Amino acid sequence: MTASNLLLIVEDDPGLQKQLKWSLDQYDIILANNRSEAITALRRHMPRVVTLDLGLPPDPTNASEGLATLKELLELAPHTKVIVVTGNDDRGNAIEAVAQGAYDFYQKPVDADVLNMIIARAFHLHALENEFRNLQQQQAFSSGIIATSPQMLSVMRMIDRIAPTQATVLLLGESGTGKELLAKAIHTQSARAQKPFIAVNCAAIPETLLESELFGYEKGAFTGAVTQTKGKIEYAEGGTFFLDEIGDLPFALQAKLLRFIQERVIERLGGRKEIAVDVRIICATHRNIQQLIDQNQFRADLYYRLSEISIEIPPLREREGDILAIGNTLLKRYCQQNNCKEKRFAPETAQALESYAWPGNIRELENKLKRAVILSDSNLITLEDMEMSEQVDNAMPLNLKAVREAAEMSAIKRALLYSDYNISETSRLLGIARPTLYSLVEKHGLQDLIRHQLDQV
Ligand SMILES: Nc1ncnc2c1ncn2[C@@H]1O[C@H](COP(=O)(O)OP(=O)(O)OP(=O)(O)O)[C@@H](O)[C@H]1O
Image 1 (cartoon, protein in one colour):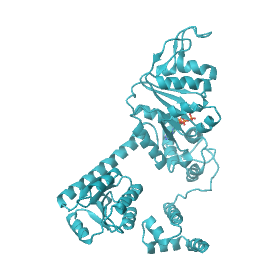
Image 2: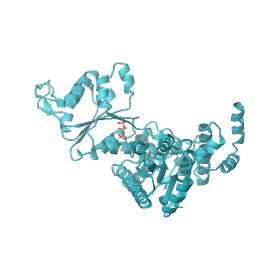
Image 3: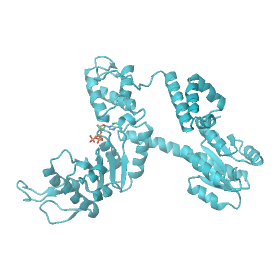
Image 4: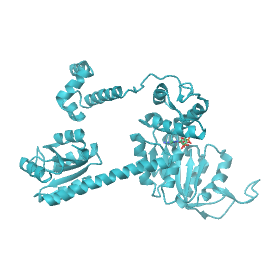
């Protein structure tokens, strides 16, 4: 069986099962009679296309079990194309299913040609969408963002969706997590890309200068204002204005910024004229804005305006696989920049990189790497080069077999927890047969754990 040709048919009528199997013989067919079999098959085979009869047992005359199955299928595998199959007089439920995310519907009786065409189109669309997702990932790379973890890929998908809009965006995340880089990516993926991207860091400019920096001033507005000067917001005309560390914006200036956001006009210091400015605003902070609002340090009305869309950027330590992906790429880049031979991480360094907490996130990784590349005198980057000590806690083994075993054990433990130590449910969640689960439980020595848990009940 190849995944590209797998078709899951969820149908409880044996006659129809046979007919479908026969008329769809160019696919590798998996049959499921009910919801639980369908979910098990989905977990085990991850088919790209599913046909789902809405009238499933225990109440085949009603669509509720079919709709519940659809929901569960899409929660587990949102990219799967589900074609719901309904009775002739059941258009309402078919439409309801499409509203819930089904790809299409098909009304019985079965016409093999039509059904074949709908299924072929579903496979085609799945392939196109897959290609699109890959392209999106490459696009992230082209903005200099290295993201392989599910956490960051979901952030990237969100960025792709909001970039072309005019929405004001608030980026939340620890220092060094890439907020400015992501703000730039939003800009370059928008229609404003050819216009300026202007960034101001509220925490880096003294409070007394920030207002004139943002809004500009007229000649004579204050001592030393010898010429008329545009503010940074004006310089961003037509483009994107990025206000970093918005949590540090002085309270008095918050009102002025709010007015600008509401009316899209500014007044330079000492000026009387309102100047219309067309900019998209992106803000960022590492601070807890809600807390600042509670402490009366941040205006709630401004916060609501700024956070039309807010995006949480996960810290580096929570991005599975990203530390080494970013580390390896930067290592190559710094070696090239320093005209030195290619270097790589010694295994214990790679392990330490993965288990270190990275409080300074990617900026800290960059700094440590730049130093290491300059100081290292061999082609292997050692712990010493990185000024790190060996981290044994939580370290993931490197040996592939050991990694697989560790992952297997952790998945089994999680499934046992989810199912409250119910063996049938655990094997269903894992997508394996009960005997396989028994042998895995034995292999990982989990019998005692299960017995102990069951004794507690
Ligand atoms: N996913 C990533 N891939 C590659 N480089 C990254 C990534 N994220 C951040 N960087 C790099 O890390 C450094 C810090 O990123 P950035 O300045 O965007 O973080 P920040 O969250 O705005 O930090 P701060 O809150 O301290 O201003 C930059 O040099 C940036 O290019």
